[in-house]
Length: 163
Image (tube, rainbow, N blue to C red; front, side):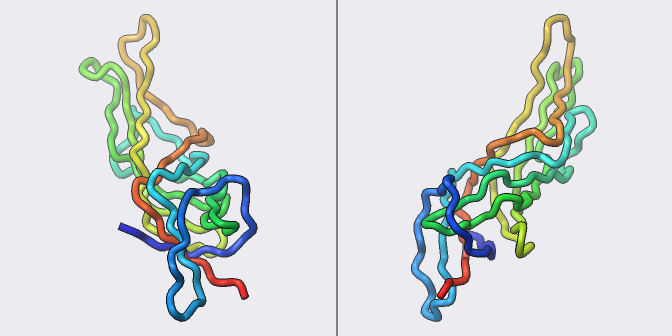
């Protein structure tokens, strides 16, 4: 499944996605690019999460820290917002000694145009580490933590052609 995100054209940054230019439509006003599955997205969490109080479908937000570029075009600019949700929560208890929380991101919002695109990242699990003499422990993920997400499906990006 491919999805689209409208973007603006910018000069290239050092980080490049290994992707290919898709043939433009006959009108020739846009260039289509494809960001492949497996592309890393470096983000900073804007939402704190906790296995003790979290619920499935709790919203999670993150900000893209490094742009995704290809062939001299900035496909997803730094500062774009990723929207996701908690997909699994397991609070620590006598039965489950360590807490666990899992998140996925499914929408990206372009920082300049505010256009939205459906994406799918691989699940990101967080699990507590039990310390010595601890009977159980929940996991807490703080806002501001840096993560590397991975696209699970390709993302199609359409940029206006520069003349």
